[in-house]
Length: 222
Image (tube, rainbow, N blue to C red):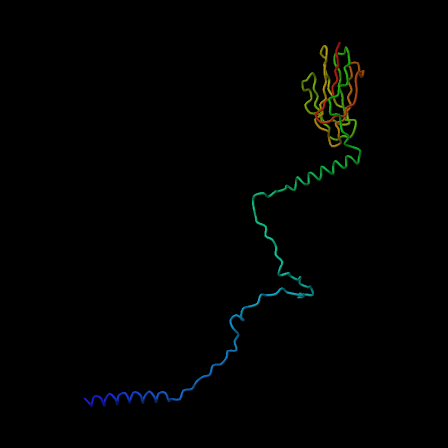
């Protein structure tokens, strides 16, 4: 029993001695060295600055205001107004044309009510009705009706006389001259003459009509 006890004591003593020897081994300690690198928070890149007073080939670059904010317009297909450039040009042209008419003394307003030039009596079998534009040839158009029936649908007036032969019926022969337009020199202007079968002028007058207005004469055959 004692042998076991001595053996145990010897074993403990051996382990303790080895531990002391290990603790006595020379070890080199490396002192802590303060890092010269800055913290990661200092490594954050600073925002770039606008170029100031920079020159390129002798030209100064414009300064940019970093605080400038440009509002963004939202695109929408609704509520947008599209203007036809042709309409704008047409309106300017019409306005210019009206100004020229006023400057040149043109553009006087014609009669807006139907004109009646009277009734004339004759015993002729027929009459010659002639008419012409006594003013500027500006594209005046008329329609001729006899007793409310169209005789000439569309006639352009010129400075040269033109007309037609009308065989008279007993009683009233109503002749209407309807202004279809006013030309480019307002109003619709013309003069007319009614000549009997013997070459005598039995009626004549002039009109100045607005568009859609008519001049009327009645030839009564006795």
